[in-house]
Length: 148
Image 1: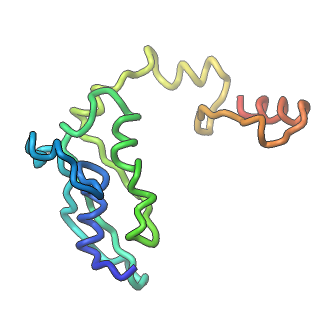
Image 2 (image 1 turned 180 degrees about the vertical axis):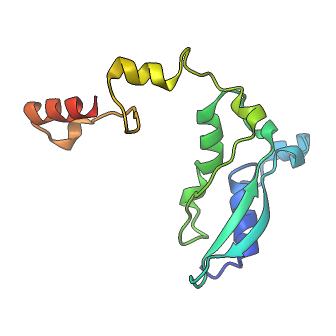
């Protein structure tokens, strides 16, 4: 609230890469420049007052090769609890082919998976239906069956 968009974009880039809210004694031991996220463009959202799109780029050295988890934890970990901003949303993510090639892939393609599951025309999702939702055994079984 009341933060200029350029400052907010820079703060998001810093918080989701090398920035921290306190001084860390190890900061002087290395140059963090090669790991810093950078907000390189800000544009207003059409028809929305005080809303902006910030474009942030991260150096690939910031992320562990082959780890989608590490990448997402770095990009969206703490930043969504950032109190300096009223709201924040990730709308687009572009992964360079050189980095995406480091991810492990299934030994066969999506068509083989669809054929094995006999599921077509919809996304295949992996999820956990938590027992704490209070479903009866019958409805829990039904929910699991519907997800298959």
